[in-house]
Image 1: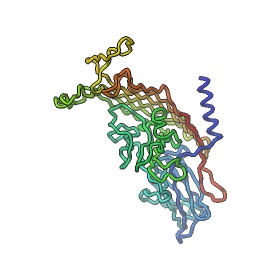
Image 2: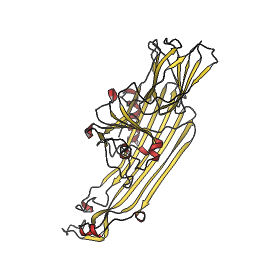
Image 3: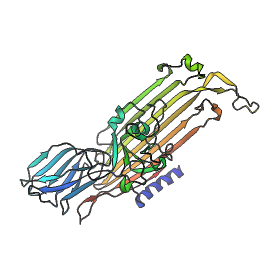
Image 4: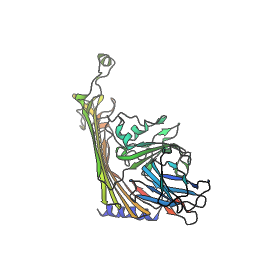
Length: 425
């Protein structure tokens, strides 16, 4: 316990003292003009959304009429432009996801203070502020698609992506990491947890697997990462869910056993030498999640748990009766006990969002992962169970703390973001 307390304290200390580059968040930008087309400095621009714990974030347009609101969570926003002597203009239904930068210009007309003009229109769908190519998969799509709901299943939706083959969840695996595209190197790919790097593609596939099924959204950037990108490879950013002022949650469960599986083990396959087929023994996926407020508009929480398991037999392999016997150097298969592979993953995540001041927000994230695989089977007809690889992680974890503070420079009067954070797998 003492070691854990010391490490946790170190995480918070490093977080405050050593700012780190983080993955870009969404933003809204534009230019404010009057009816004649002249730019308007000093316009107060407010972005409001239920996903903001502070409810409203505001900036002031600069001398050239430009404004920029940064570090915005995925969700639907409304934008309000106000300036004394001009009618208030309100733009609603602005959808933000990933690191998308929405360009929304404001046109103000001279009018009474109590007059408000509500503008309706389609959400901007083209990011004219960046050359980045990215695909954003929302939580609704993750819940709806018939896949394993892990990183491989999400990336399988993107044309050209090369990642681990997705079996639709039949293997009982979770997590995963960024794949490759356009012939890129796997070591150039990066996986992020809420914008902070958890390692290269192969280096985090076990100890720091993200819970994709419990994400608010998954953002896969395939090119044009620009300044925040460490390498030129694919980056996969798993954005976790936040709490809210209202309590909400969901529960997902699926499973099957061998009685629910058909067979194509024909005489022809037997004649070709297949001694026994691969058969499903059992598979399940259980994923409850939920959160809400601790203090309204001040302190939110969200909890996620996911457990997956998949057991299946190994074609052409059985348990060796002589396993562990130092006096026997031959294999004696027990044909009544077919070898099998098993995979089990348990992942619990806790997230706290604290709006310390109107401009300072702190996020705490803790993920614990228990994983084991191939305990009793070799995965191959040429490897006996006792010679097979047994992989176990008990536990691995990601501890993350971030501080964000959108600030306004008095000279340029434009919002900018300051962030700091660390990840300790």
